[in-house]
Image (cartoon, rainbow, N blue to C red; front, side):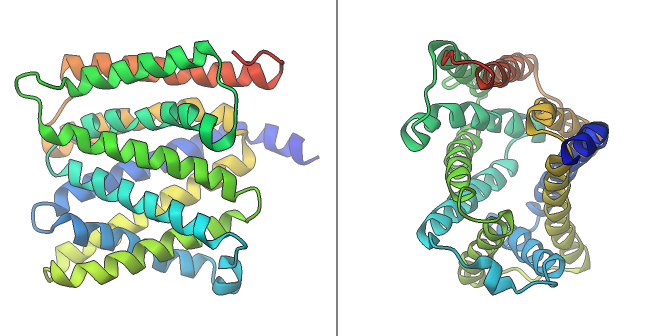
Length: 296
């Protein structure tokens, strides 16, 4: 009966997934706006602080500490720190790079998950998926264009962010085998707000009303985005909604043009196309392998 209900809500699940991604892009646009007056550390703190506050509000019906209990605290601490580092590097990149460019490089993360699943999850990855990973990495190199005239050094920041985020995703898969999704969410929020709260006094700039508004909206955008993604995956299979991940760069290009007068150059668009096609190929292979014994 539950499966029938999910099938009837696939369209809604896709819509929620896309709206969730749109909220993420709104948050990333707010990061660029905040960089005019505040440093990366304070912006990351605001993202975690208000996200944590909203998490506590939504989970207030249950005992927060009870839901945070886990038999593998070091696993949760490690994945949460990786998420924090990935966020910090990505937010730092947004100070220097166009919105769509930074997101395009970050799309390497799904490909890296495939590569890292071998040593960390003991999964088998055949030559076709390996080839797709390498081609996708080549697409990222086209976007970054190391050594080319006009290439900004900050192009490597979302690359580092993608590596950290991919390992975070792998560790989250491992954690989800023994803990509820709420446990994962609470740990990520607590670690993020705790570490940044220790650091932010050293770089604090008292926000004005607009600054506080942007900071609250940043945390709310990520909070709502995460909630919509979780809801989408409850009513539609991940294999169905995952290909729509790449709509995020469309929203980024639109907001980048409207707010910052930015638009990806032809090389970035070419690299993005290669990354997207590589990711979609890996997704297609994973669907096929799930229904066969072929590991390639």
